[in-house]
Length: 376
Ligand SMILES: *Cc1c(COP(=O)(O)O)cnc(C)c1O
Image 1: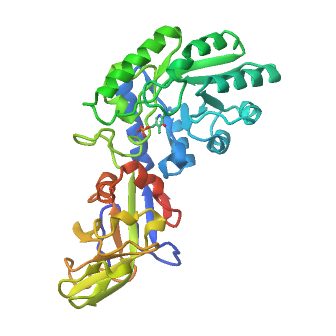
Image 2: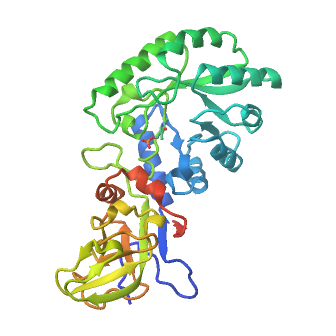
Image 3: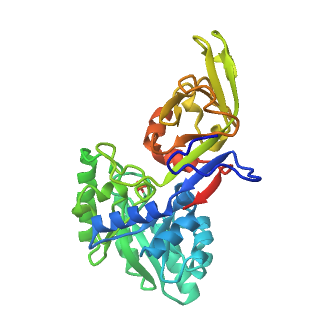
């Protein structure tokens, strides 16, 4: 039997169909929210819960954060807002970062969802919807301050100012923009974007500002405005690329061993035989692969852990399984059904992201739906 590892899910008792356990620590999530709230006070912290709260479960995440005082929730797509809006009290606001596609205006207004207006065209359509419904409609106005992605571009600002004069029916709650390099405190793009945001605030006086994502919060108070929009930091991800991560881990992933074997020197491992053993080797196959978000780029690069011992991935990552080298463990330590740590105290989401050649955001949002999710 396995010896207990800190926070490891209890061993199965009766029928348990899962071969992997994704544990989400809602207490740690709440503490991260409180930490960020204190960091930005007197400004407030919203929660970015797009992509199912970065894969962690938008419903559980949003309800937990609401209970800890969060009242502003950002999703990316209108369809995400339609799912989330009914789960939260009326005093919570749900914003759609990507704005509205033509035809969704009435459903958005009737659903009590607030669009982020990213262009003159979207502003006109929202104004027209307000006129058709004979009521004032709330909106957020996003400006592009140098990312060339979403938001009103500089050359549209004059026309926008003119159009706003015809938008008495549209309540602009605040203006916002998004930082492109906030995770790098040294990047001069941050200062450039802040200067542009301040120019915009002068051109459109009287509006509150919403600017910083997780990284932006740690760039200092001048980036905070009245409302900040952290995402990754809530979920335990490092808000900045350098220095220690001030956030508490929220996610833990344990995966079951489905076979062990001993192979002689010279054995080929996995698809295309990309790994050949150098000596007698003990191997284990674990029950998760690239279909479960353990990216194929981890082939012969990543590792999992057991009792703090690093167990390297050998050969290609398959769709549903990964082969690991367990020679470093005592014989018999891992048997059918034993769990190994994929994300946990020995391997952060940043560690696995680095091995996979990506960022923690992609690791979290790739986590599949075949794990049993446990909320603590
Ligand atoms: C995703 C997103 C955020 C959250 O960013 P993090 O880096 O995860 O904190 C904030 N604002 C906008 C516009 C976003 O698209």
